[in-house]
Length: 373
Ligand SMILES: [Zn+2]
Image 1: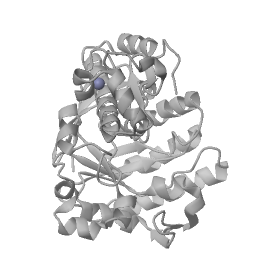
Image 2: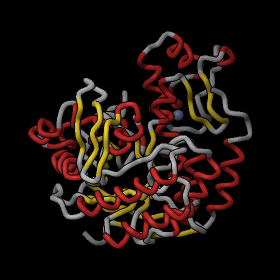
Image 3: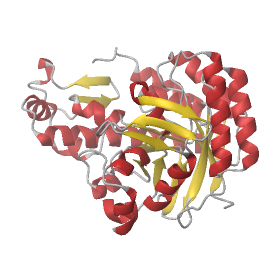
Image 4: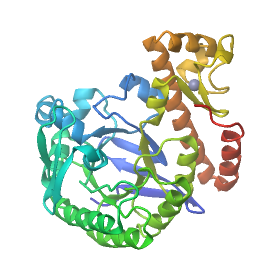
């Protein structure tokens, strides 16, 4: 498919655009809330829409094991099954298989064998199966099965990850897709500049609908990770969307946007919420802290989310301390809204040509107080 992405503005290396999918347009840069098991934990799809989410992420690995792609297909596909009618991107399972090192049994040129996290049974994923699962799920964007090497592996292992990721992308390139489904390849190479270039140079001629920068945010230091991101982006086509896999802290999001990334996902907003913390312009607030006991202010001044417009820090602190479900839900809604608003502001700054000023201001606001855990 051609023309699935329109670049509308650039400012330095930062980009604004629109990704066109079978179930709607996604303004970019875009943060994608993660609905691993077909649900963004604790958040109703209508609430997601109201928060400004334009695309959500599902996971082929988890949905394959529970409840299974055939059952989901029988019930109309992942959109109908989860009652989210907007764009969905599905991850292939490569990250789950390879990042959970303890469950990995064996991998070869044809696929990978591992123990399922659900029941410990030996299972095998192949490029063909990853494509089939995502075709049955009916997602708008399917990701290629790739090999995501953790930080600190040998260069030989990194080189093999690049080699097999390309081999698997070649196999997946022309396999059957759901109607209108886009397919993205994932570049690998860790922090190795030569391998990152090689991975992109092997995958770009295959003309995928978009390219992910994979194999980063897997435990390495932040500064080299951002350097590798900028380096990886150099070799990706300007006309195709770029997806950084697995970043969702406010500073990190700003830094990858500055390096030409269009899309990113992370469980951080909802996971942070479940630990009782809020993302704010004053850093991360742990609501369990006694200093919020009588705080009648909102989580974050100026936030228009359902938590900030109606409830106080003191009340949310009480809910969190009592392990009330509403407390975790309100924090999830707020954290998602915070990131979605942050990315929307970055997009506006790129469009008006003021991204660098905005970025410097945003980073100084976010880091003016030390992060609390
Ligand atoms: Zn809020």
